[in-house]
Image (cartoon, rainbow, N blue to C red):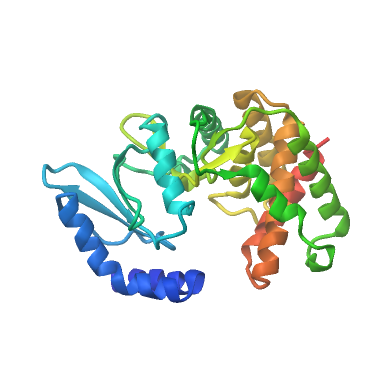
Amino acid sequence: MNANDTDRLLRNAATEWGAAGRAWGERLPSLIERCAQRWALSEVGALYPDAQFNFVAPAKRGDGQPVVLKIGCPNPPNGEIVREIAALSHYDGRGAARLLEADRKHAALLVQRANPGTPLAHLGNDEQATRIAGRAMKALWRPLPLRHRFLSVATWAQQRLDLEPSTLPAVIAAETAGSARALLTERLAEPCKPVLLHGDLHHWNMLRDEGDAYWAIDPKGYCGHPLYDVIAWMRNWPEGLSDAPHAQEAMRCRVAVLSEELGHACKDVAAWAFAGLVLDAWFDLVRKPDDAYPIHMLRCADLLAPLTT
């Protein structure tokens, strides 16, 4: 493993999970060896540079099959890794990386590796990328199994609607927060058949396989209203948002393309994204006041605001 990348991963785990994260970091070499033996891996490569909280690395099976090994810090029974395993199992290779092996107890999984594995972020055409993402979202909106442990969008929403007004950060106007609350409340009240959602579908979680096919990776295992999935897409800008003069038109184009591909009105696509970005930014800033990413989400929300009516 690359020492610098590994050190960063272990620091992140310790920051995110405290003592449990530090203990997991100490066990990581033995966990990798355990997976290699159990799943007959002939080699395990270096940690992917963009791995932040989980060990994720290319590997090969004894028969030469290229795969990806992922090991996370064990979470509660309904934790993120367990939900990811359940989602990939339910997708069964339809629109997402195929799950080959799983060890829920040790939060480990083995998935098929895309070839060449180029992220959708490298496509260079935002309208085309959004169209690909929209089609992927629709394909991944699978009917729910009778029994599941996926995280409900209603639970996510309630955590944000329960935020005390006294905690509102100065960077979020009270009027903006109020609009976000109202829009989310209205959308949640609409009749909707819940579906399995990816939960974090953005340019870096879509990888190109042979030809022009793209797979989704790293599903978060959410369930509920389909348009929850547009939030992650709208906050992700491969080339950065900044104050680019074309940003407003690019956002308008994203909304229009997703409306067409998903069969939902433009104002509903924009409303879900706007409400989610504002309330996620508020929620994150309460926990991490110095985090810069919520500020980026708020800039994205500003671009969406005119499109919600």
